Length: 286
Ligand code: HEC
Image (cartoon, rainbow, N blue to C red; front, side, top):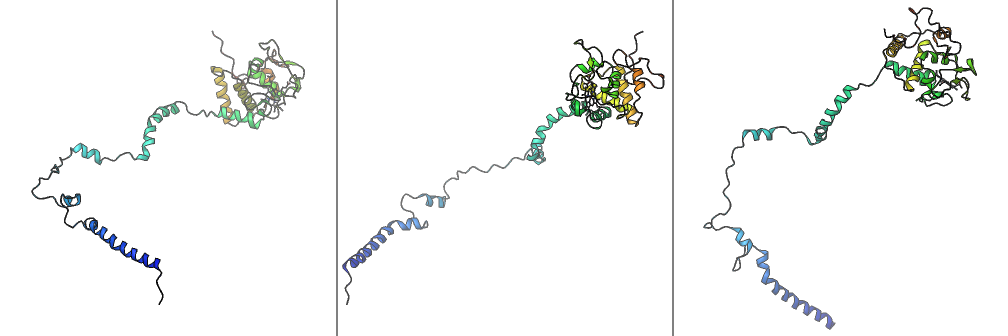
């Protein structure tokens, strides 16, 4: 028979000894921990005490107080529907709106057809903006945003003549009123080409409207009763679809000979039915 090696026997022996020793150790503590129903050791432990309160000990829990009926207004307040959380920013913004809204009422967007149409004519249809800038800042043509335009043409009628016949028609001649710097314009002096004649390009009403717009760009005061009368007149004629062609001789009769070369200053041949275009002369004080 084969012999079991000594070291294996030894391991087996010590394993047996260890097992019985371990069991002995565990038997001391296991029952108490493992089974709460086991008799409590002397002195008692927490689980045992909590398990049952002896009947003869007073119950220290406060007596439940019967709830008082809530006042009706509290009940009503609780039942009331609240502002949902998502709506809070809207509610918070209401005062701002309340202040801002009347402001928008006071300033309705300015939608005067005369303003919008004359702007369109200047920038698109007649193409003035291409050489004078959409805002009148100038380019190939003169700028309108400095004082020179209104100093050169104190009255719109002389500006109408200049635009209608163009600069080449009076090449090298002085035109316009004497400016504050003591000089007058000389046609062609800008040296960047000519002001193209508009006599055949525009109708009379459109000529007046682009000139009105240029003067607006130049910052003209357009508040006198006469000026407002001209504006009302243009608005009415434009909306009525007027298509009267430009009559250069008529414009020259209306223009000021001191400002416009070739002007006669005779005035309209029939002021009643066909007054000179532009703001009517201011009424003289009696
Ligand atoms: C092709 C470019 C061009 C276009 C388009 C043009 N202009 Fe001019 N304009 C000029 C030039 C260049 C001059 C200056 C010419 C000169 O040297 O006398 C001028 C001069 C003028 C002047 C004189 C200004 C001053 O201070 O003496 C007026 C007013 C004017 N243009 C109005 C208009 C109007 C209104 C339109 C649109 C209907 C228009 N222009 C379209 C090039 C243009």
